[in-house]
Image (cartoon, rainbow, N blue to C red):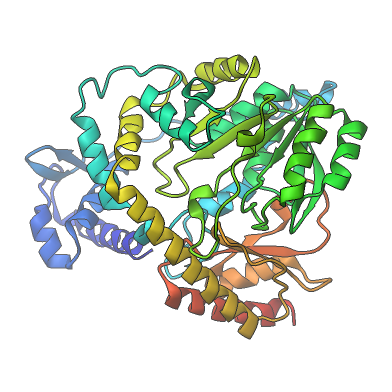
Length: 478
């Protein structure tokens, strides 16, 4: 947050000074800007890059930055109203409309304004990301022979082997496809398993990005209630029978948003019920590398206990590293793997080789396990700090489950509370929270908010964010 604000401040300062220079005139050197504005060289580099992107300066390697010539007048705006008819064609046909609501995803991707505490983030704060280790891995990857050549479409064999090892002896590298992050893997799996117009069973509540994927593909998400023990298997068989669905999407470990873990007795039940229904289970194992220090031994992935190919497993390195390290995987057995491979190839050909090579360098370095241990300790400390602050300052917000993994807490609002009003009041008070409504594919039973403790700078910012949320609750909830 501080880096973003300092870049913005420098950009604004340089814009005010541009009139001092003639067109084509040279701006001060990076070193001079560092000394004048007392910022880091990285901040200067990013500010100049932003000015260049806006067409205000041009950069010449080895020479510096120069004031750009003014842009030509923008061409006249065309008439795009015809698109409303074209895009509504689905509504006239006997198919599920593919209107996409990405608001639930965007709320975790949009950077809040300067000074706003970011409780709505979906990734680790920059201070928790292994930036030095990733930079070193990328540098080593660039020196590998053939680092910029075309990779195998399924992914580098060594990376597929590494992902497969994490799933136990029953899954081999031949069962793994390397994907461009977990979101791409989920999209590929859902398109492979549910044709347009078909239903897909989902946990309720569940990850909004998955609901957006389903709707974009014309698939109907059908909710199956979940509780502290995960998806309710007493309702699952009936849901399969009533809908004819052939796929269930679930997060058995540290579910988003509840943080629940699928209970041991339900693990076998989910696989049995799906197998009897002739259906697949898409296992989104997004948070396994975000375990907290006090979690104890983790259950294996569902894919590890699945000899019959019921499970299509999805996981990613992104959540535990950086939003930009978009390297994930799909694992499956049987004929479905060929369909997944075909869709993956059609969509993206392959994941860029330098990114795969860098991922291999990272997970194979001593820094990798050190990073995971650091994250485990830090997430526990942040979870405990946020939990204690909420119980002290906001007892009216119910916290039914304290997770031992993941990066967020799921809070239920008092009955009758206006969720949208609270989210708006929170932003006015200087804290961004994620509304609960996008996590439900049908009408929610109550208002909720999701608070992330991973995207903030530290414990002091958590305390300040909860204080601001108290102010918002006083305004919105009375």
